[in-house]
Length: 357
Image (cartoon, rainbow, N blue to C red; front, side, top):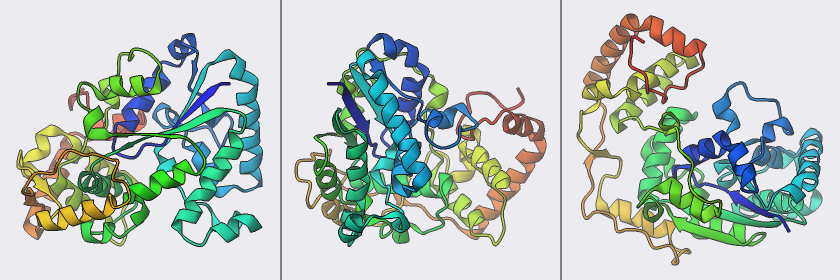
């Protein structure tokens, strides 16, 4: 029976890089008997850029919406898997949105409505549908967990920089709290699939992607393109971007220009240089959050957090004015380069080229 590994993330655990390496080496994977499908060919509209086709976001999205067209497309994808499974020993699906997807309540069946009494029940609907999609395959869940306090800080930054959020860090901790309930996540997965879980910090030692390839059982790692690695903006830049997003009106183009400015290493002087900042105000607050997240997941053994927390990240009006002035000056000087990047649909975090090229 063909093995299907469903890599569900979680977020901020090297998923983007892993997905890009797998997508860039589909032909070589085929020689190893491994299929990494292009799900956009079967579900939803084709994406416009290569980077957005690396993962399988269409699958959890369609399982969540589950309208008539979604069900039809999922059935077509299932038929495709049934037709090609004799050619492969292993199929890999990877999308970190599996980790947080909730179903559209308007398309629930009667049986699903009876289960949808809480978040755990809603989450189980997604995986029940996934189990039906993969019926007849030897499917399992693969998930990586990051230490909760670090995960929360990283996800907060991600929500500001690449999502729609304008919440404060304190508000964010109470938003979709199920993401941080590691025990509940594992229990939900186990309702429908065998689960293998790993601690991200441990797997990052000695080469994260190499260890992930080992966990997937697909042989030696392929050469990876460093440009696909997800860089991060400095924490003060997160607060700069948040303040801009809270304006009554702003354009996506203007926001992406600011993101590019924040990603460029030479601009770190506007965001605290090499000072290490954090969003946790006290070790007690941080540790209480971690303890709550791991309350029902004692099997997860994370490296201990430091005894102190970094300097708390703050962003004053003066800081904001200086960053805005520097940004406007940079945008004027580099406008041709910025336009060329936009024309070529280069993501803001892809900064391997020097300004002026």
